[in-house]
Length: 227
Ligand SMILES: Nc1ncnc2c1ncn2[C@@H]1O[C@H](COP(=O)(O)OP(=O)(O)OP(=O)(O)O)[C@@H](O)[C@H]1O
Ligand SMILES: [Mg+2]
Image 1 (cartoon, rainbow, N blue to C red):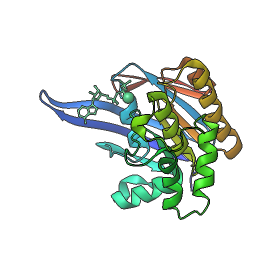
Image 2: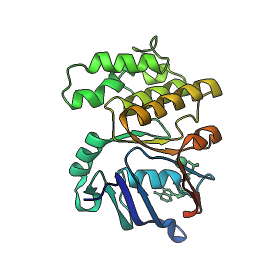
Image 3: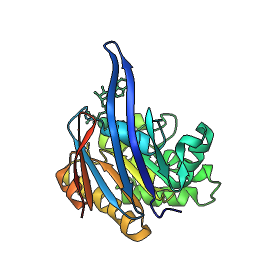
């Protein structure tokens, strides 16, 4: 068995478009050990979110494969992939994807309730407190600012203490002070629980806190900085 928590082998993604097939990710390889932190950088449209979705098993590649926490994702059906994600993965979407009909507390409680944990309310409340939203627990997403929604999304991704935390621009909507606090929280999870971080970011300070950095350009990996 491999000691890697995440392996991408020759990943590619091809999508149909009016002009014919478009390759948005080319033959990308990557391997992460537990506790690694990786920043993915690159200009808009370079394939960062696409790559993150493939690594987390939210989307399937056109070529190559992903192994996540010892599971070969290509060999699993959608339900099985969802189970691997529930057990091992936290994901912060670029667009947050909070459930509109649930308030902040309920959104964060959800992953724990799905696990049948009895301490869901306390844990979710404590984490929302830590991201500075202790006074917004009963607010619905539409009653929260963009940065507040982002922090709820981060708390939701954190709450079940995932082995791998994927976050797409986790500080994109935050002022520099709040962004720094959220970065601290990400790296606490990394340090204290050995969680692996995979972060898409335009935030240079956040990128430089990561041990490793890859740069995408037009779906190609052009730069790979090892520690
Ligand atoms: N399902 C799809 N069908 C067609 N094209 C797509 C699809 N998904 C992504 N693309 C294209 O692939 C490219 C990469 O998209 P992606 O969302 O991964 O970029 P990104 O690096 O995350 O950009 P940003 O920094 O703006 O979030 C873009 O040009 C986008 O238009
Ligand atoms: Mg993106």
